[in-house]
Structure formats: C-alpha cells, structure tokens
Length: 434
Image (cartoon, rainbow, N blue to C red; front, side):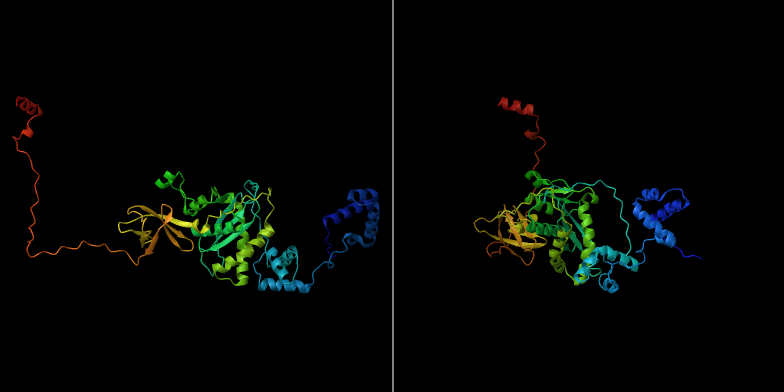
C-alpha cells in the first residue's frame, strides 16, 4: 500500500490545474491566472511538482515545529498548575492567573493545550432571540440592580448566600456586595456603597421582588401625602429622588444577568484561592475585584457628562436607609415595637400626648430612634411589659357600715290611663279648655 498524502483544498486545486497543463488542456500562464499566482511562482511550483510529484505541492512547513512554539517544559508546567490550582477555570481566566505565576501565554494557546489534554470542552453559545437595546448615554443615568443566589463558597456556605450586584447601563461599571440573602437590608447596603463611591444615580432598574417594589394600593397616610405605595427600599430611594423602574422580564436587564455569569465564574475561584470564609472577607475582596472587572470590561459612555448627584451636606445616609414603623403612644407613655416596650421620658416640656402616633426608626447599624412630628423624643428600654396599676381599695371605718347592695332599678312605665297615653288631639283640647 502506498503512503497516504494529506492535502489542503488549495493544494488539491493546484494539483488539478497542473494536471491539466500536463495533459495540454491549458497553458501554465492560464493555470497561474486561475490559481491567483504570478507566472514566476507558477513555474517554481511546476518544477517542484515535476521533480517531487504530488508531495511537492504540500507546504514544506507541515510537520515542522513552529519557530514561535512554546517550550515543552512550559506546556507541561502550565498543565500541572492548571490541574493543581486552576481546575475548572476558563482559558482566559486561567491565562491571567498563570501570568501572575510568571507563565505568560495567550489564552487561545492555552485553550488549545487544554483541549488536547481533555481538560476543557467547547461550550455552545445560546442563540440570540431578543432585540438589542442601546445603552444609556450618560454614566449614572440608569443602574441595573439584582441579586444572584449561588454556591459562592463551594459547599462551605448557605444556599441563600446572595451577591447583590449593580452595573451602570452606559459604561458597564459594576459593584457587588455579598449578603446572607436578597433582602431589603442587603439592597440598601449595596446602594449605599454605590452612592459613597460614585454618587446618587438618576434611576434604578430592578425586578418585581418585594424587596424593591410592592403590589398594593397606597394606604391612608400615603394617600394624604400624595405618594404611591412604597416599600422600605422604595421609601429610601424616594428620599434620595431616585426613580425605580420595574423590569418586565429577566432579559430586559440582561446586562446585570450576564455580569453575574462573570462573578459566578471568577469570584468563586478567587474565594477558593484566597480561602475566604466570611461575608466580611468577601466584601473586602470585592473592593479591588470590582475595580479590576470595571477596568477590563467597562466601556466609555456616549456622553462625557456624569449625571450622578452628590449627597447633600445636611443629609446623613444612615438616616435615609432605615426601617420605619408607626406606633401609638399608650396612656402610660409607653410604645411597643418588635415585642419590646419603650418608655418615653422626654422632653419634659414637650412630652408627646398619649394616643398620638410616633415613628419608630431603626437604622442599619442598630440604633433606634422614636420621632414625634419629625423630632426625636427621649426614651428608655423597659425590661418587659409594664404592669397595669390597680386602684387602691378604701379601708372600711369603724363608724360607717357598708351599705347593702341595692336591687337593680326597673324602668318606669306610665299607667294605661296616664295622660301621656291619650291622643295628641285630646291633650290639645284639654289645654284649650283650661
């Protein structure tokens, strides 16, 4: 059996044209034109084919080691580190980590090495099925916000662990906060962190969870104030003049959804590499992690105008991101909140009247305030529910004896011949007769 010769499509086309020249069906100049070669290059290929046969048409670099090939020792070292430390990392992320270890390699080269070694598989991209929405024009014009539940600690945490993520629609600048769950407090802490870093955005793009919006009619107080039905988070945004926009579907806020894919790939592996175990450690890591992602993936906005607003000097964010509840003052000037009783002690000259409404404000740092008409009042926490004071009984004297209990009185009824029972006309006639 003869040796099998592998040829590319271009090389097979050259073979067909040269065989036609050999049969006399066309000239070498015509073959050069059909192959897109100069006549001089066609003569070189013709001579090499006549001398070496079909093997002369095969590219002479085939089977030879590339001059730009990486050393085999480097290839083995990269594969060893990948199996020991970076298993499951994508080629792009793994190439970044290997560069920090002193092994600078292109991610596509690493991808081929991993595919050859069976350590990586090609994943198919999902087809696009929705209309693309253009980005906003300015930084801070619209910020998408959502939470992502994931196994962030790879079995070492809770199934409710949630990364609260925010991403600017115009630039792709992002921010993340790790929390126990997607709660109102977690959302407020994430927005607080964004405001401290960039300023107050114009609007937030969120989904329909109760942590962001409510599905009820405005209550009486909201109707009197001319406000819509707001959640606790919505009330804080209302104080900061931030518009909340509800997304109709997860795909509508696809920018933050795709951003979570990056976090679930890179942040999980970074937590594993650094051996982090607590939310505080992860949030400290996110300070620099978010900046690196923003530098790598963010894009310049269409407009250079930053529409973020600075926090007013007379406004304390700790008094904005709070939980507020309305309570009624009892007759003994006590207030009950979260099954805890508080005694209002002042101010002495302006003590709130009993049966009036007060607002109990709990800040995120645990500080509790009681406000009456927007002003704080003095209070102290009681160890338990206050006991009701009973009226003291009067002691019986020697000179006075206790009276027996009187029988209940029966209602008085007029007799049958009583004047009141006469018709009104007869009573009028008697009066006139007098």
